[in-house]
Image 1 (cartoon, rainbow, N blue to C red):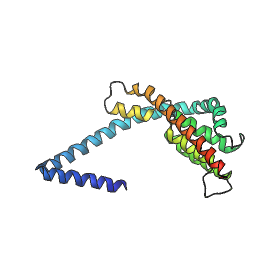
Image 2: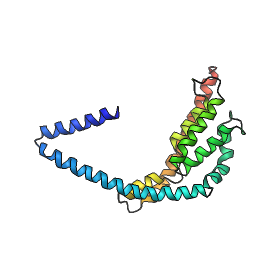
Image 3: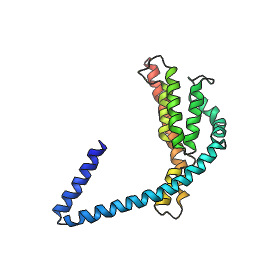
Image 4: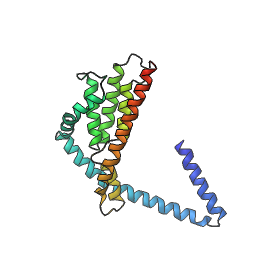
Length: 196
């Protein structure tokens, strides 16, 4: 689907350039855009390596486990159907902790592990359980304390203060998470009333 969208955008640009009599601009524009893309990729690689390296050090130093200890009681309230001693609970806590620290690379395998463990608690392997839906909603909203990727993108684009996005990111991500959890509770109540 995304390839079709790109094809339509390219075709639309070429057709528009032809209709407006500026078809000669297509080749130099394409070359300049390609050069800019490579330059941006190199800038982004350096900044991402710096941030991800710092976060990896924090992860090795036990920051994820500390976050897990802090948010564990809250997570257990959000997932009341998961036994506290079940491996799924540990995987959920680690996933949310990694997401909050902006460790997307670490959060993905932990999230997959959490889903696998939650599936073991399900009687119907073909249908997502309420806990699985809650975890998906929580990860999608992406509560983030350190938006490393956005900071890296802003730095690569030449922002004078790339970290000024932190406050707005915190407000938006917490609001989105609260809204997602509220809708999740409403849906649980609605579907449990129908016997599902």
